[in-house]
Length: 292
Ligand SMILES: *Cc1c(COP(=O)(O)O)cnc(C)c1O
Image 1 (cartoon, rainbow, N blue to C red):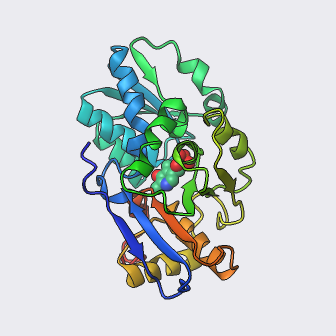
Image 2: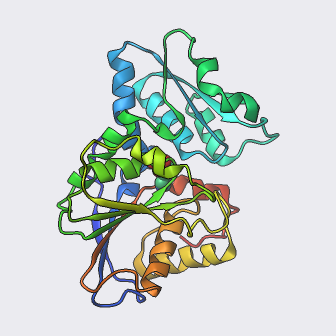
């Protein structure tokens, strides 16, 4: 994949105080279908499948999973067969994300929450199949994300913020950050206490940068969209021209806004926000709600 569309944009929304500088790494510009961090997480997973000679990718997700949509598109491009194991009953009408995956040729199998929980073992024995865990949460996924901070010179940033689901992207950022940087994950799920361990499981031994998860910015929980968030996304777009999504990056920037308000960042901080993409998720909303 050609990464030359990605840009590093300085942002100056009116609520940013002068002593603090902020920029956004626009992974959303990578591709409309395999957007943002999902491509980095898939890169070495697909390479592993290829080097093992596997022609079939199997992975897992829920109805709003950008990982499912991205995997379907990436496999379509790579000429690999793919199956998505989807949590819950098949809905009467597929939502936008699942329909997109289906259109890209992914086979969808809907399984009960119970089966899903024990998923890995029940699907492991399919022949010619390479399994990618839910959200690409494995060492290969984190390894791809270690390349994100070297797209541009980023060593001068003091803080790096990223929306967090499985913690794979965050782990890749931590593994590749300098010892002077603080990496902050903003979980979009409520009660994501498992995340600390999930991130640690993917860290290189001996990494020394500071990192933390700030758990109070999920805005009601995963894929919960309050009117306040919609207003914020629309206003941020009017202020900066940068579109964000309702599940991850809108909540990330909203968290940043609140942290600024709380005077969380010392003067002269240089903050890098990772725009992890996910804009396709906005198509789950009725038209006209967002003015992007
Ligand atoms: C999947 C996704 C994330 C979460 O990434 P993890 O590596 O699972 O933490 C963040 N932002 C967007 C836009 C995503 O689609």
